[in-house]
Length: 261
Image (cartoon, rainbow, N blue to C red; front, side):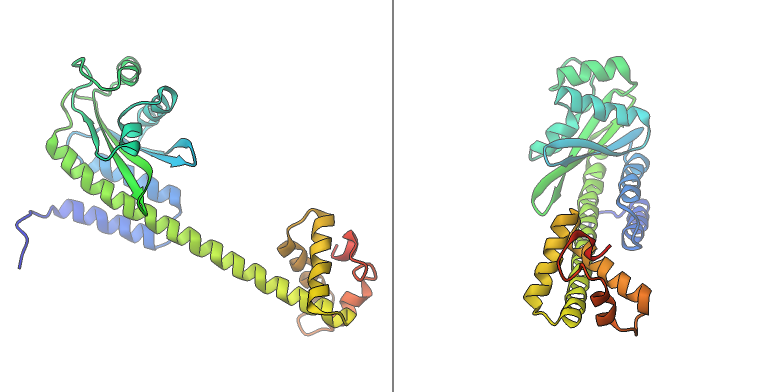
């Protein structure tokens, strides 16, 4: 069974390129920039685009095609209204085809945009991440009614892809955090083992020694553990005598701040 909906090969090609960028491990800034560049290239009548993200309770302009689009993000943040801000908090995209016709829902925003930029038409699309409203994609035209219903439909497709891209970024960041946590746990476990062997103490006592040293140095526990391991390896190499090295630091047994320096 085939679909009756026409497929635009240009859009498909753009999505393939962005997908390749995401899964090649590109940084989040590059992905954000690719999204706004894609919107400007594919949305009919779009002259510029921006991506506004909400971090905790703050809006941040994450990417833009040019300084005009970034400036408009700044206007929205300052006045607290506009297509992007409304798109984030509402259930539908926000489209003002002609900012010059006096019927705008964002009077303060529109007054500033008309006075300070060439933009005359705007659409904002909300972006969802696991059901959470995390930002919005903005598209702008310098021509009154330059963004039509067709423009809005294409922009909605790109915004949907943008939400998927943000999910991929979050998943990758969570995976990196998990890897860092596992690495830290391994180093802590190794350092505990070195201290146990050196001082013939229990695992709990060795961990308490690391913990107290961490507090005295005002240093993360994983960093203290790493220094214990690095000190042993630099002194004896991976195959050396860990007990002899750790025991040789007489103040380690007392749990003082010089234990792992």
